[in-house]
Every structure is written in C-alpha cells, then in structure tokens.
Length: 417
Length: 99
Image (cartoon, rainbow over all chains, first blue to last red; front, side, top):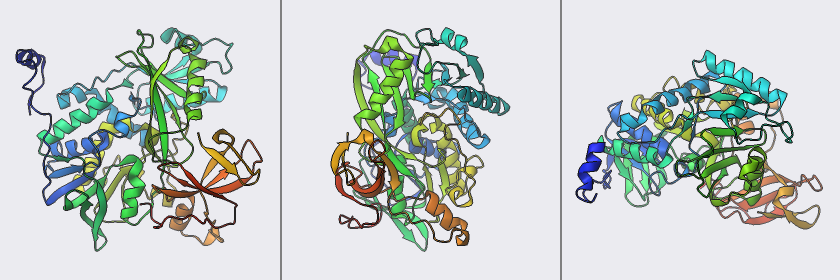
C-alpha cells in the first residue's frame, strides 16, 4: 500500500497527480474464504479491516451489491458521540470513540474526525432530569459529559435562540466535548484501502442472492455474478436489508426498515462550530467544513426500502431547526435524500449469533450507526474470528428479545428518534 | 406524500392525518401464560419487514380515529389495497418470505 503523507503530496504534484496507486484492487473472488462479510458499507469494511489487521484472518471477502460505502455510510449526518445511558451501550459506543480518536493515524487516511462537541438540548424539566441522569451515568462509565444551563448553551452557540420567548425554551443541555463529526466517505474509503492492503478481497457490484445452508450451518453464499462462494463463517452487515438476508436463512429479526431523511443547505460562512441536537423539538444540525448546514431528524413512520421518504417529515425537521435558529430561516436547502435504517424495538443494535450456525449478524443500528463504525467493526471482527461473540457484543444478542434483557435506550440517551 | 384512502371515511386524505401502527394480522396468543419466552418474544418484537409487498395496520389519527389495513409496496411505496380489519387481503406476495 502506498503511504500517504505531505511529502507524497508534493512528490506527486511534480507528475500532476497522475501516478497515484489505486486505493484498492478489484479482484475476482476465490471459491472459498475463511470469512465472508456481506455488505461493503462502513461497518462491513471496518469488520474486514480489523479481521485482517488485528485478528490475523486475511482470507476474507467483502461482498457488496452496489459500490463501497454507497448506502447509509454515504447518507448519514456524520455525528459521532458516546453519551449513552446504559452501561452496555455506553461501553460499546465509547469503545468506538476511543478508536475514532486514533483512526486517521491507524488507517493512514484522513477521516477528518473533528471533536467539536455535541449538545443534546433539554426543553422541559423532565428533559433536564433525564440529561442529569444520563451525564451522571456517562461520568461513572468514564465518558466525558457536562450539564449546561441555558446561559452556558447560549455562550457556546451564540446564534441559537435560547430566550424564554420561544415555544419550547432551551433550559439547558448535555455537552460531550469529545464528540463531534467525521468525514463519512473517508471512513469507508480508509477502511477499504486498509482492508485491501491486508489482503481482503473487496467484491463490488455483486449481490448475494441466497445463503448456502447445509445441516443447519451456513457454508457460503450464492451471488448473482460469481455463483457460489464458500466460507467457514458468514457475517451479514447490511443495515436496512438485514431482514432480507435473514429471510434467506429462514428466520425473522426484530427489525423494521424505515426511511431516514437528511438534507444539506447551500454553503454559508462559518456560523456553527459544534453539533446541536434536540430530541424535544426534534432536529439536529451541524456545519460541514464546506459550509453547508447538515440537518437531520427522525424516521418516516412507515416501513420503506426506497431510500426516500415523505415531504412532511423534512418539513417538521426544518420547522424545528428554524425554531432553534431563526437566523437560518432564509437559508436555502441544496439537497435532500433518504437512507434505509433498520430500527430495533429497544433502539440498540444486534451483534449476534443466529439460529443458523456460522452465520452472524451485525445490524439494527437504526438511526445512529455511523458513530459506532470503528467499534462495531472491531467487536464484530473479534466475534467472527473466534466464532463466539466479543464480551462487548454479548448484551446485544438477537435473543435478548426472547429473554427480555433489552437495553432500552429509547429517548433516554438523547437519541434523536 | 402518500395519499391514503380511509375505508371508514370513504375518501382519500393526506398521509399526515394517519399513523402507521406496524405489521397487520398479528394475532395475540390466546393464552399468553402458556407461551414460551421465545413465542412471546416473537409475538412482541419479531416482524416480517419485507422488501416488497407488506400488509400493515394504519389508523386515521386526525380523522375518524379508526383502524384499517393497507397493502403497500415497501420499495415503490405504492398502495395496492386498503381493507377493513377482519378482512383478508386480496393482493398478496407470491412468496410469504421477506425476499
């Protein structure tokens, strides 16, 4: 793999940047792998990368229906935080946060991780009680967090309307300084390049059409372009389409796939240097390095695989944003899109063994998977390498919906749903 | 924006008047106490979530507040059929799986 550096940039400028090595190969798959990862998004590529780099399993294929990082990795609002209420979730997301902090160096790829902090606003007394409870829980878990009052919030975000005259006045917020944003595409590309350098085959434009199941164990996949490809273990990391792969294995998951929309404005001068999220008026906003406001909110209520949603949903989102930031009221929106998110009843992911032997699922990240990309990939890789779930993944078994041990993060973690 | 026909009001109304309540035809086990954890968990949480035809329960929340069923394509979002609770759908997927 070609090492990226400032010196390299200067060197290649002498040849008009025409001789850069390709970031990854485009190989024809072998007949048999140790591990097949279905889905070449951020989580799948991270899984492959850590399998090869940390766990010594290099005979790995990632099979992707479209192109790398073209699904939810390309469609999210890039927020990274780890201020989750319950221990199980906090440990998992904080594991990811620690990996984020060294990720650009680790990948030799600038993922533009910017720890500009995240505010989760409170607009009611109950919001503020929940925020205090959550910040206390975070600090007991070694995760940074502070409770701010309205005045402190106003100091951090001078352009936000924190007056008492709004319909839902800002009473305060939780503040996680280490949280922030990252360049979403770079995360997929960095992991892809790293995985490829360690020998992982990235197979694009190839859809998995069925699973090969023999004696109750998954022994490979059928694809539309290369026929059967066998493997000792198969990991499905396909987000919105997880129920479709599960149906190939003959079981159901506790998931529903919904459209989640987001939008960006025209680029404007720097005005917002942190991330503002509000559960109560329901919207979140940050500003990208390019200058566009990146805006998102909740899912469309109906199930949908169409990667688009209904107009009323984004209309409500913008109502919330304009309520918080009247100064944005005349900013024009540039682009709007939707992704397919697989939501779990308890708003926590599924990292799990399944009723089919040697078939593992990493799904159910719902509306908040991007922040977990490195941690999700790391613990899922550990699980695939051993054939047994990593300790951090154990509480997230799909069978928790049988025994009732849910990790109920709904609303409680400042999760904007 | 979906335009949904309410079979109780007998007119098309905009999506915002309605709420979707999830998969239709979920039968509550007749004797919950006799269910295993697996059976009860599957009743509560496990869903078909098909890519394609889906039968779902809607409520006309800002209208007559009555419930009804909708058969909808989850990829094109096209509504194929609206029918009353207790009725069987006439439009069904060729395969019952989520393919």
